[in-house]
Length: 162
Image 1 (tube, rainbow, N blue to C red):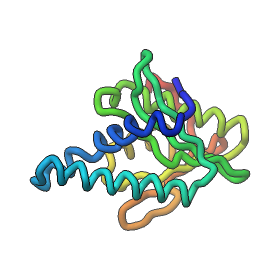
Image 2 (cartoon, rainbow, N blue to C red):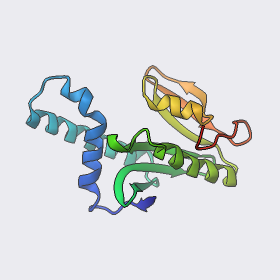
Image 3 (cartoon, rainbow, N blue to C red):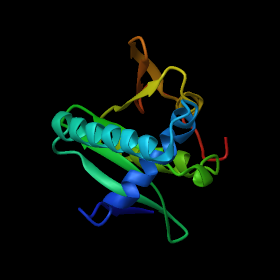
C-alpha cells in the first residue's frame, strides 16, 4: 500500500496530485489554463520547499491501491511524536476507506511506540470529519487550522467499519 518516494521519478505524479487537490478552488477564479498551471506550479514548489525546511527528515510515501498510484503521505517522526505532515489522495480514491486504512497504519505505529499521532487540518476541510471519527482530538487552533492529536491512551478504538 505504501511505496517509498523515488526522487525525481515521482515528481510529475506529485505535482498532478497537488493540482487535483486545488483544481476546483483555482478554476473558480476564471483563469486561463496556462495561468492556472503556472500558479499551481508556483504553489506546489512553495509547499514542497516549506515541507523540506520544516520537516527535513520527513519520509514521503506514494500510496498505492490495486497497483495504481492513489496519493501521497508525508510522515515526520521525532522522539516526541509521529506527525502526519500531509496526506493527499486523488479524487477518485477518496471516500473509499483508503484514508482510514492509512491513518490506522500510523495509529498502530503510534500505539507501538507509545507516541501521540499529530496532524493539522483546515477548519473547513472535509477531512476533519474523518479525523474526528477516528478519535483525533483538538490540540490547538489558529485562524485557519486545527491541530489534532490521537493518543492510544485517551482515544477510543475505532475499526475500519465504523
